[in-house]
Amino acid sequence: MLKVGIFGATGYTGYELVQILTRHRNTEIVFATSRAEAGSYLSEIYPQAPDVPLIDPDDVDNGGLWSKVDVVFLCLPHAAAAATAVKALHHNVRVIDLSADFRLRDADVYAKWYGHNHPAPELMAESVYGLTEFVREELPGAKLVAVPGCYPTSILLALQPILAANMRLSSPIIADSKSGVSGAGRTPKQNLHFVEVSDNFSPYSIGRKHRHLPEIEQVMGWWHSAPPSLIFSPHLLPVPRGILSTIYVPLVYAVEETAVRTLYETTYANEPFVKFLPAGKHATLGHAVNSNRCAISLQLEGQTLILTSAIDNLIKGAAGQAVQCMNVVFGCDEREGLVG
Ligand SMILES: NC(=O)c1ccc[n+]([C@@H]2O[C@H](COP(=O)([O-])OP(=O)(O)OC[C@H]3O[C@@H](n4cnc5c(N)ncnc54)[C@H](OP(=O)(O)O)[C@@H]3O)[C@@H](O)[C@H]2O)c1
Image 1 (cartoon, helix red, strand yellow):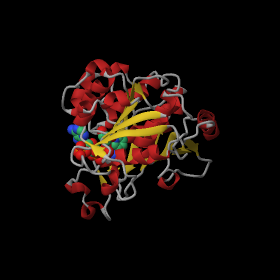
Image 2 (cartoon, helix red, strand yellow):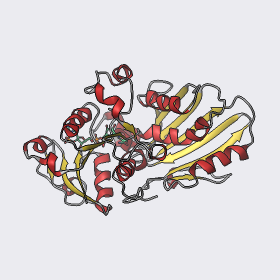
Image 3 (cartoon, protein in one colour):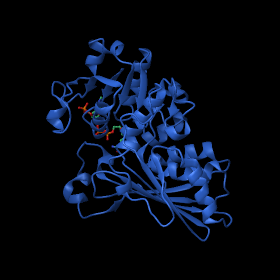
Image 4 (spheres, protein in one colour):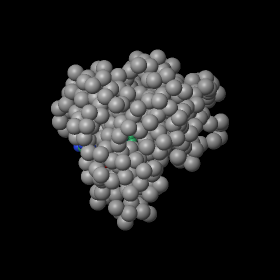
């Protein structure tokens, strides 16, 4: 049994993680933290949660709990996650970080987009970017895994086959993404109130302003020799969960749709959590919500390739992908605990 600690268990991703780990046959939750709810049970906050006791994060140090776990999941805001990762690694505990702290490779880029210097820049190069489908060789035994962001997961899984094939593409690729409200976390904010969100549909941070932009472009640069630039426009969708991205890719020369379809079918043929849909079908939130699945569809219009990708932001975009990574890090069945 893997002994697991969860930091930030009362947040939306933390709660989702508890649900997944509760049905995982090879894990035992040793501790779960919350500063505000320490002393309560998770079931007092989420009625459907198991009776997991919540402790203050300081009690992990004070109670000598680092020696009782093999791995910790950080479901924390950025900066708090990095500080906790430093402690965990100091105690030889492996880290699966759901925050953005270890996704970027460049500390200056991090400082520009997150508004403060990175708390542990020396660790940035050590993390494995945990898009499991493409890092299965790097994950086993990894000490620090950066779980990809939710929007980046939906966009990068859709783009990978054409980028890795180094197809000649024009700029910009346009990713038009829509997320359910849980993507913003559990802390109340005015623009997330029911009255603001219900019967409404709003863009935010459109163009090249969202923090996930440098993360997506960084990975595009790993896969393509001359990656196009990206216009990334997120929207707040009045549903609790799910991300749907529609991505417009301008091609330099005409190709047959069947050739592109073959590329996707080949790439994802044996993937347990990526479903490439047949011609004429489009990915919808219904294909992905409440599962660790990413559904992808495509259509060619002249020299524009239109990709559609759907995930559950809290599962494939966060807690599910985190468990998928953990499974590979520790040599468990990659599908354990997860719904595909
Ligand atoms: N929501 C998503 O769809 C999604 C998807 C992918 C990645 N992420 C990332 O995953 C992380 C967690 O997201 P979330 O949506 O679950 O957030 P959330 O709902 O706001 O929950 C945050 C959790 O962290 C705890 N916390 C907050 N500040 C802390 C601090 N300074 N030190 C220790 N604990 C602290 C909170 O409890 P207390 O305040 O009681 O301690 C809570 O349990 C974030 O970095 C987010 O960007 C989120």
